[in-house]
Image 1 (spheres, rainbow, N blue to C red):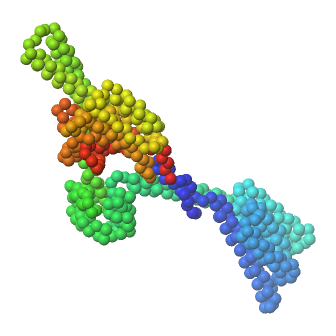
Image 2 (tube, rainbow, N blue to C red; image 1 turned 30 degrees about the vertical axis):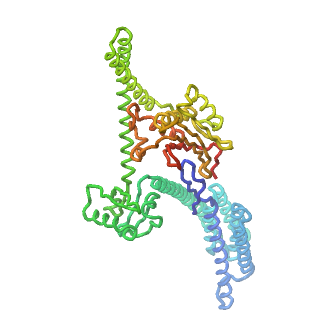
Image 3 (cartoon, rainbow, N blue to C red; image 1 turned 60 degrees about the vertical axis):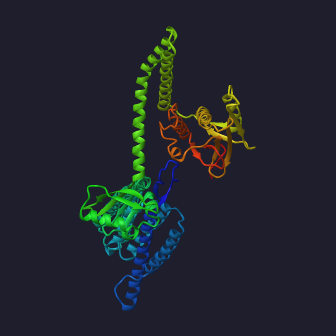
Length: 545
C-alpha cells in the first residue's frame, strides 16, 4: 500500500496528511488471478495425464469429451487472464463469470470421469473457497447453494441414466462441505480485511504522528539533534542545521563538530550536572548544551542546543515586563499623593502673599510635581496601551493634515517643518492614532534636542518606497548636533534620557507602538548633520509572490 500527501501544507503550519491510495479490488483481483492460474494448471495437468495414459496404455479416462473439456478450460483461462489484465468488465462481473462457469465445467468433468466417485468433487470445493474469498457473504453463500444444486443434479442424472451406483450420502456431504468451505473462507476473508483496514488506519495515524513530531521539532527555537550510539546524526531540525551546517543528517558527529563530539563523549562517560557551553559558527555564538538519553539504556541521545543570547534576551524581556508591571503599580499609587502635593502647592501660591524666596520654593515644588506627573502619565500610557487597529492611509494626504495640525501655534523662528514627498501614490497600513503619537514624539524630540548653534530647528520629513520587501520608509531628520555614539546605543532603552526634564520613555514607547503595527523604528546614519530616525511602515499595495 502506497502513501501520498493529500493536503497541502497549511499557512499556519499544519502538516500534509498522509493517506493511503485507494485500491479496493487489488487483493480480490490477485485472488482471481491465482484461481485462474490454478484452473489452467489443473486442466493442463489432467490433459498431460490423459496423454500419458494414451501413450503408456494406462487405465485413465481419455475418451471424449474429457480432452475437449480440458482444452476448453485452458482456452477459457487465457481469456480470463486477458480480461483481468484489461480490468474489464468489473471485478464483480468477472468473479461471477469465472466461478459461475466453473460449476458446469466441473460437473461435466465429473460425469465424464464416472461420477462423484472419481474424486473430482474436491475441485468443486476449491471453487467454493474461491467464491468465499472474493465475494460478499450473501453472494458467496448463494454460490455455495448453486454448487450444492449442481452436486445433487449430478447424482440425479447418474441415477436416471444408470451411470454407476449413486451414493446420496456422498452427494449430501459434498454439498454440505461446499457450504462449509464457502462460509469458512468468507469469515477468514472478512477478518483479514478488518485486520488490514485496522493496520492501514493505524499506519496512517502513525505516519501522521511521525509527521507531527517532525514539524514540532523542526519549528523549535532551539537546535535539536538525535545521535546514535556510534555518534551518527539520525535527526536534526532546521535550527540545528542553521547552527552546524545544512549537510548534517547521516553525518558523524566528530566530522560535523569535534568540540560537540568531545562534549558528548565526556557526557556518556560521566554525565554532567551543569549544562556545558558550546561555540559554533564564524561569530562563535555561544549555546547551552543539554544531553538527554532516549530509548532502552540510553541507546540514542537527544542533544539540545539553546542559544545563550536568545535565552538572555528572553530573560531581559521577562525582567522588563515584570518591571513594567511593578512601575505601573507604583505610578498608580504615587499619583494620588502627588495630586495632593500639587493642589497644596497651588493653594499655597494663591492664598498667602509670599516673599520671593518662598515663591521660588513653591514654584520648584510645582515644577517637579508636574515632572513626576508626566513620568507617571508615560508609564501608565505604556502599561495601558490600546491594541492596534491598522487602517490603509494615503500617506501624502495624511501627512499634510498631521503637519497642519502640529504646526498650529508653532513659532517659525523656533522650528520649521519641511515635508518632502515623492510623486507617488503611497499607501501604508498603520493605526493612525499610533502613527500620530510616534511622529509627535519624534518632532518634539527634534525641537527639544535638535537645536543648532544658529537659527531655528529645521525638521525634514521624507519618504521612499523600498522595492521588493513591502516597506515604505518615513524619515524624520533635524539639523541639530546629532547624538553621541554612546547615547545612540541606548536610545530605545526605557528610562534612558540625556535631559534632566525627560522621562526616557518617549522613544521606547514609540518603538513599541511601531511593533504593534508590524512596523519598526530605528535611528540611522545619513550624509549630513543632525539626527535621522526611520519608520519602516507596511506598504498597503505590496503583494507577495
